[in-house]
Length: 192
Image 1: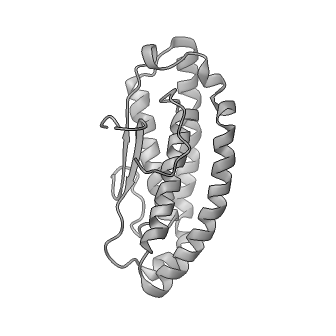
Image 2: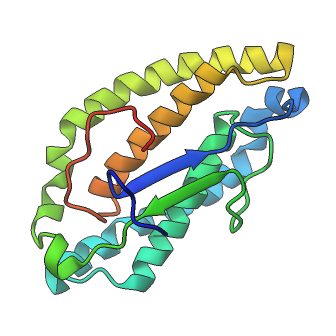
């Protein structure tokens, strides 16, 4: 968990340097269901505890940061798998092809006690941008799905776009949901 050079959250996903499984790609919507259920059940645990701890105690315990860090890595492995970025089934504990760097916040100095109550409101412009990007990402994902079925390869430009959207989404989540930073996320598709 190294300190990020730009925004305090960096997501990197290894581009598959081998042909992807066409059969796994074809059935991906069905194959992802079990691990998606696991991710969906764990996600609500990411927001409420840090919110309460920050507002009432002005603390972000290291163990809770570690929990959210591991949860974000897991969620991004599932999302990358759903996005066809790998045909390796997402592990619940190994990093695999997704790597995440998050900076541990000093809650007393770096996090405002009351800002977590309004971050969701401040992030509305990001939600609008993300909604548009998600629609575009669905189109890109369908094109990538076809490309993998016919060629066995994920076109690099499409992979990079999906990676960028995931990175942008992560920055917004780190700001609004897991409350690890008060630094407003940039409107950028940069992956760093």
